[in-house]
Image: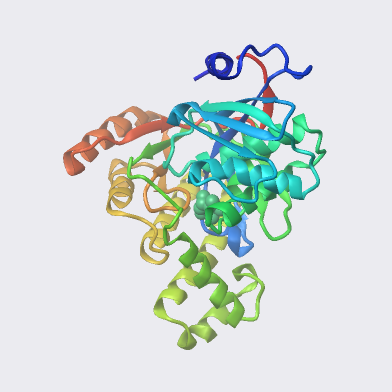
Amino acid sequence: MDSKVLLQHFEQRFGKSTSVGGKEAACFAAPGRVNLIGEHTDYNGGYVFPGAVEQCLMAWVRPNGGTRVRLYAVDLDAECTFDVNDSQMPESVHFRYVYGVVRELMALGVKVEGFDAVYGGDVPLGAGMSSSAALESCFAFALNDIFEGHIDRMELARAGQRTEHKYVGVKCGIMDQFISMHGRAGSLVRLDCRSGEFEYFPWHPKGYRLVLVNSCVKHELVGSPYNDRRNSCERVARLAGCDTLRDCTREQLEALKPQLSDEDYRRAHFVLGEEERVLAVCDALKRDDYEEVGRQMYQTHGGLSREYEVSCVELDFLVQEAWLCGVTGARLMGGGFGGCTINLVREELYEKFVAAVQQRYRDQFDRECKIIPVVIGDGARRIGLE
Ligand code: GLA
């Protein structure tokens, strides 16, 4: 969907976009993301290496002069109304993402008033590409802009993260909201989640392409064991006397092993390894050594599947097929429990891989997987009629 079609929906619902009390409707966009490596490290104070994608959530937003918020989600054909002063959150989980952002911005001192908004986009839902962070970031950016909050992008990202924690119940890290706010076309970003420092890495892997394969197994972090994983990590960090696992060494973990459940040990063991893999990938990138990047990606998948236990048969199958095809690197991406694999594929293998993996998936599971080529795009922004 483009912003023009979205505007038509807006005008059908809320009237012409000329002006209400002198306010024009404005359009905003915020992207989903990929993550090259560094999974489940964000809430452990570690490194992540994401990039924003071109797929976005877009919203037309116009203040309505009152205190009511009226929302229409085109893709879901669903609507919701609440008052900015309501302390009761909407029943529908989907609309709590917007409600939460409104409340969190108000708590930061932004004078959010009533507004009408129509939104939709092309970040696939439940694919592990952070459609929910795109929604939060789009509204956080839009409301901060329209109501002149002057809040910086990092704080807006944190407001999105708090929305997940407080209104949706997912104790996520900062990666998804961070990259939806800070993405830059053509660059991946390495974020140190402990210090908040980040660095852009131009991503033009000569001779290789990144492609996602969506297993179309719905990935749903709400009510998933995602929070259990986080709890395991926090238990181990506490026992080690550290704020987060980022500060815990391998020696400390081994010394604690007798006191830990097998499960907690394996979770923490994965996280410590994943920290090392992100740094190994950064080194490899400096040498343009994409084969090494790929090896690290496979290692990550093995850990996510066997130690962190956030994979599923379909994702394991997709990674194995990639391996058998000679793909340079593949792993499940994001929180897990469904969604996509991310694949680093040599140009000359690309067509063959894409055809083979689709066929093999169909044969194995009697269902389709979806190929999603990755183009690294920009973060949250105001847009015009595109
Ligand atoms: C989800 C969360 C992120 C991060 C990833 C796993 O996408 O929202 O904060 O923890 O899972 O790396």
